[in-house]
Image 1 (cartoon, helix red, strand yellow):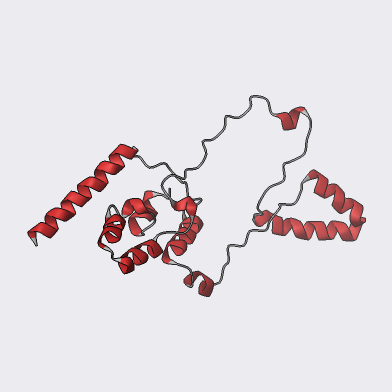
Image 2 (cartoon, helix red, strand yellow):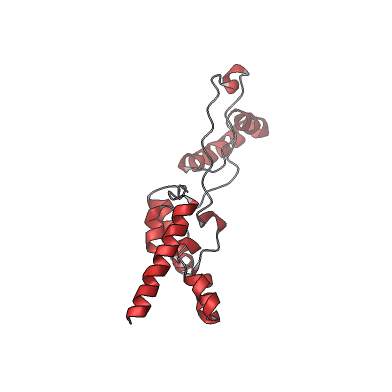
Length: 173
């Protein structure tokens, strides 16, 4: 589930709607139902039941040091890799392919290049939720998906309370 900061600003999943979807189906309000469902996030990682896996315990013995292995291959590049690319080019000019291959064995290149400079026009064409997630990741960092603090019984109680409250308002009107 997304952080509470993002969930408080945007409609993400059914839990935020309470009993509204059920009432739309029950009353035959197809347009209202379609609108509400289209407003929900299509990313399954945004839903309440998805959480980041618990961190595994580190092994007491570092096997990389024990077997004298090199550095692990990183998944994404950082700013230092652009400087390193120039260094590899210089090594290729001086020592040829063998020198570059040796440097690659000692310190392997990352598997993907990370590009954070997405043009403003592309960002503006995203949905508001995706824009907020992009902004959050660039300003705050990785989005930690935490578990929903309520048990299923408490969620059901909240939905029933919201329905009772809504029925009380409609009876008063």
